[in-house]
Amino acid sequence: MASGQQPFAHASGDFRPSQGEVLYEQESGQCDTAYSTPLELGMKDWLSQAILYDGKPITTGREPWLHYCEWLRPTTCLLSRSTEIGCARAFDISTPWKIFVVCRFLPEGNVLGQTPF
Image 1: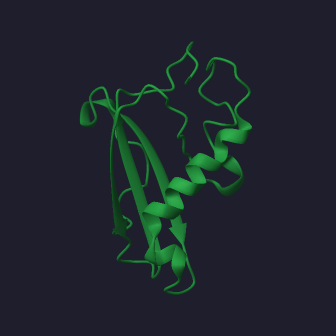
Image 2: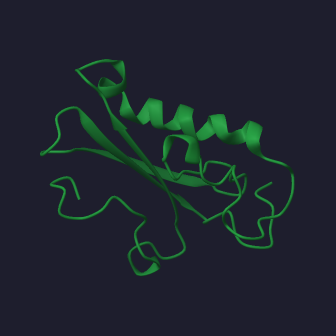
Image 3: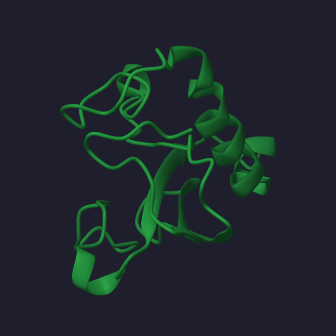
């Protein structure tokens, strides 16, 4: 992934059994705060989606609060039933100042037909 050989995408269920996953990708023009604190920045972006939530169950998986499409960053962080989370970041070795953040959580959330709260 970090070498540009793999697209940055969600892992298949085989690689994350019963785990939910959120992704964040950031590219800076320099070594700035966004580059230095990618986990914090990713969390802030994920949590900022709360204002998009309409209180309805997930019906398609394409709800605007599930995918923050304005910035082309597929993310979610509206999972009140999750009790465990683990996060990691990686730096792109081909593109300067590009970072990737992945967080996984248990139990997985955002299930079709259910609300996240």
